[in-house]
Image (tube, rainbow, N blue to C red; front, side):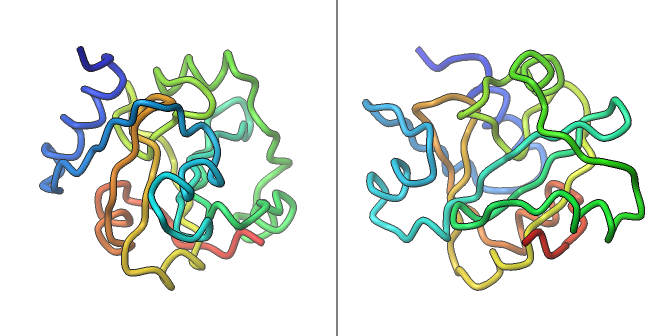
Length: 155
C-alpha cells in the first residue's frame, strides 16, 4: 500500500503534466547521502526539499544535497527578514510530509519555493517523494516549471 503523502506527490506530478517517476525503496533514504548511494548518483544531484520559516510562512528551498543553505544570503537576495529552519511540526503542518521525506510538490497548499541554481548542472535530479522510502527523478527545467520556483543561489 502506498502512503497518502506519496500518492499526493504522484497526483501532483501528473496534474502538473510531469511524468510520475516515483520509485519506492525497501530501505529508508532520509538523507541525500543515503539516497545517492541507493540511486547510484552523486549527492549533488539529490534535491533536498527544505522547509524554512519566513515571517510565519513556509519557504521551501530546493537545494543540492551537496549544499548547506546560507539563509542570510537567501534573505538578502529576497530582501526579507531572517529565515529560520522550521520545526518538524511546522513542516508537517504545511507539507503533510515528515522531515526527511518532504517532496517539492504534493502539499496541501502551494508554497513559495526557491530553486538552487547549482542543480542545473545535473541532467537528472532526484527528489523526495513524500516519505522516507520514496524518490522521483526530474529535469531541472521541469522541476522549476512544476514548482513555480524562483531560481536563486543558495550558498
